[in-house]
Image 1 (cartoon, one colour):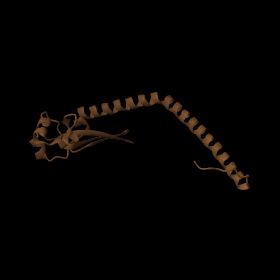
Image 2 (cartoon, helix red, strand yellow; image 1 turned 30 degrees about the vertical axis):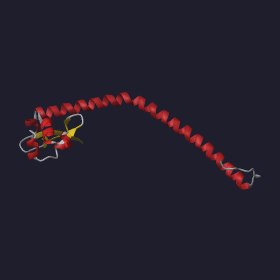
Image 3 (cartoon, one colour; image 1 turned 120 degrees about the horizontal axis):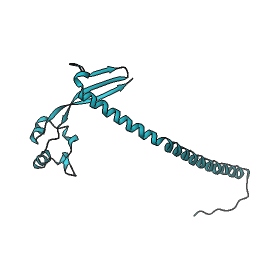
Image 4 (spheres, helix red, strand yellow; image 1 turned 180 degrees about the vertical axis):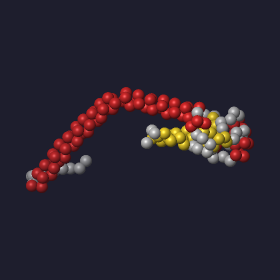
Length: 156
């Protein structure tokens, strides 16, 4: 611990004391204001949270219904060679993409081949890692790539 010796106050000491007092008062005011803001923000969050959750549920339901409708009526939505249906409120789109089919028995074959790099610790297939494999490697473990429809939309 350092030693301090009392010295008679000088003009500079008084200025330093004044600045320290201002810093202490400002710190207290900042802390008070920060706490007040946090409390008000929590009130706003609490006020809007139920409506926000309801809107998120509605959004997911509408989005799911739109994709189901597009899949069920794809011939009516997308004519030959078309992948976009333009409507007044937006557009419905369909894309074909290659995905790794999650076939049965792949885990056993991966273990047999010693390919632990695509096996999760929970003893399940790491399907995202298999996406990087060649078609021959996929065939060797009993799976392949298939075309899959993926639907999306854009709003105006």
